Length: 356
Image (cartoon, rainbow, N blue to C red; front, side, top):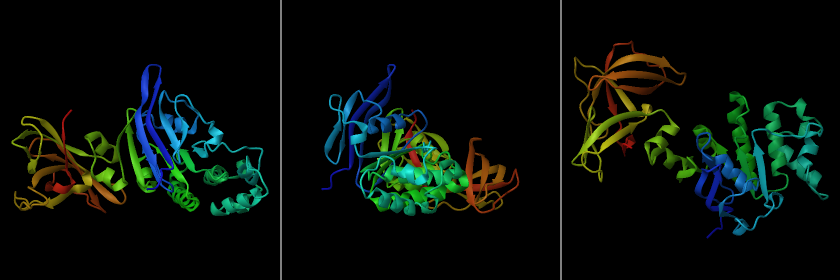
């Protein structure tokens, strides 16, 4: 069985009597990209700094390739952990050229060859004699990546490294960075608050909230099997239909839903993402027939419709209870306000959570 490149166990950190990292466990395998994802202030950057050795945990252990890096007694200095760091502030030395920045800290006769190899990988070899102020933000990011990889770290820690880039450049830079990291075989722990970035880059996502990892797994599983309503809402807009359980069933405008194991009279939230609502036309006051997959149709009246570029967003006020539901439709679909239409929802894309 392969040894984890990075393994942290039961990490706890308090600041001013407030627990900001709460018994965090995390494993990253060699060559794997793991995203620590969560809202601002959830403790993800503090976790990263503890791994790097910049902060000291109150309890818990960190191992690299099976060897203890630190606990509350033993602490390997940051420079001896074989961990590279890359932050949103690229922190290039302004008085050094691109080549000198990448070579900083390298020793030995092969350092020049290593610098050239990395700059070629990131497409910056032609700028080897330029200074940071002569580069664009995307170019500086590439140089910062090359500098972080120059010492051949076993682990790369990245804290919101793309947040300072223009939106038009960001996706391309992310893909290029991922290709380089994969080619180096580096284990990566990337901190981000952007679900799209995590989905695009990660082999595995660890979703963090209030200092704890609440769910961990492949991006597909995290997205399609959220553990609670907050987790589902973190990745996209959601519609919430409220109901109450009776005999393991809940009544909704869209028919009954199963709620196995939920006690009678428990209030529940049925969550459905806007892209999983289906729209059908009104047929003289009648909608489409029920189906096992889509359940019963419910009528709604268009409140407004907006074209979003690749899709259209349509908001409905439901006849059943006056609630507002949103539907996302590919391409252009802009029905006029007050148009009556029928909605159906994908049963296999709904999540039922007891209300808290």
